[in-house]
Length: 314
Image (cartoon, rainbow, N blue to C red):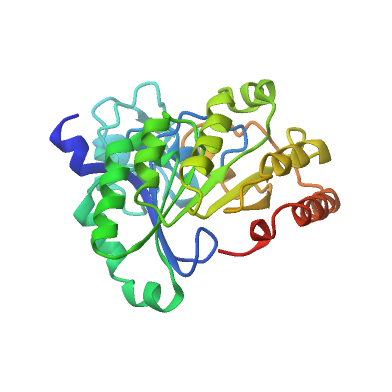
């Protein structure tokens, strides 16, 4: 890989003071690019590896009052149309982002920016005092952070040299050699296991899960002391059944360094689909909270039968 790939990564967000994605108070660095296409994805801006134009019409001043994007676009992608706000033809847009520079209301913006490892660590290190007191640190998420493998691994290495606690959130859909290399520099790994049925994976996520399950088993065997948090997002119509969660829970038997939790489905990322001109495939789907609570009870009972360490917080 070239020098730029080694030093820079596509980052679409940095979130401070997180307490849900690893131990303590953490800074989460979200990287662009993901090989999965989860129908419920809450970060659609993470899927592509390149920067993308976002258009929030709710912030737009209007074509008559402003119209600067129309004048700035060399491709004519923004047009006045019949609506109050300019209409964006994404087929014409070449992602030059000239419209972003002239928009006074930030109605058009960019998802994703190149950042160097040093740039990222400067942001992360600003909260070092909070990490020291809480046992927190850096979590790299996405997208799938291991899709930007070299950047992620080098960022982890640099963070460890600066004595920053490290974690990643991963789907596990990567080469084992990449996951193994990253794990050597991790204090915690958050591993997504949505179900064990590969056909369902292909139907809902567009990739099979054999590599994901295989990598999980290899990870547990190769790093028996590395804390692993397995998460299953409960999606209505996909994996919201007792059989699915028990299947995942039973997979954890014998692995004493593993904790398991369910995540409730939500639609918080739905507006971002509109900003990207994309369709949210699950529409008005809602979580059955009673069923979710029942599944949590099923998991709690199943974990009580596993090794005691499995139930402990890290």
